[in-house]
Image (cartoon, rainbow, N blue to C red):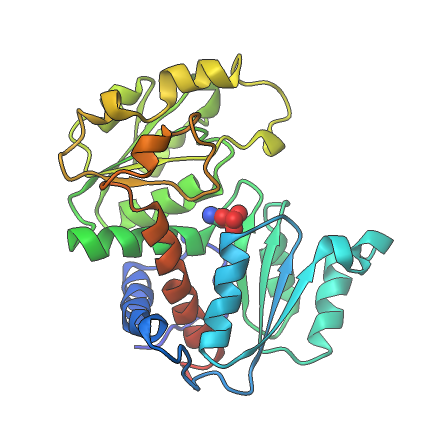
Length: 307
Ligand code: CP
């Protein structure tokens, strides 16, 4: 099956069949990263540009590793070292990069909708690597891949997402994806961090972490995004941690084989206790490993696999 779309901008617009295709393609690429020579010629001669207007460790590195493992050439641009600092607009930047004939552009931007805007003016595929508090589709795909690879399914699982839901593009993309795939999604966080009307996305909202976690198959802690808070929406980090940090005590009510997830970067001791982050139930680093396979799949499907 082919992916009949030019861009990956969000999980909202993906069908169940498309998500399954991406996850199955990602599964098929896992083995490449275990080889001694971690390279296949699939995208030889293709050029992938990563354009990051926000900091990143995991997403950017794994897109670049994914492209290199597919033999594509990669060019990495940070807004801080580009002509963006001289006032060049996003559209001008994108059109100038397009003039050098890349085959695909990956973009992260603090403004929701920025990837959609450039996708509308470029002929090449665009992948959203995170836009403001809107969507982070590749993170949700790697999260679904991780859950599915261990639990064998997504449908019927109880997934608790805990923390700063309001500012979290990871939460939004996972809610779209997990509900589509048949999981039951429960949210918990301070009332000030739960968007009004989010129940309309098909989730159950709790104000006590214990209620969300009870019998959960998966618990996903979210990063507190201090950089996106315009005003103080909780009294202090210590107060937040007292009520919403995942720890040995509250995780006890989850399923015994619960998967503990976090998109990173982790604020240890705030969103999750350090011992839990490193426990046998934690799959935080497996999420990162699977990120490479998911991004290989997307680059293949958009930049070469449909040929
Ligand atoms: N999960 C995630 O998006 O991490 P980075 O910000 O390091 O890319």
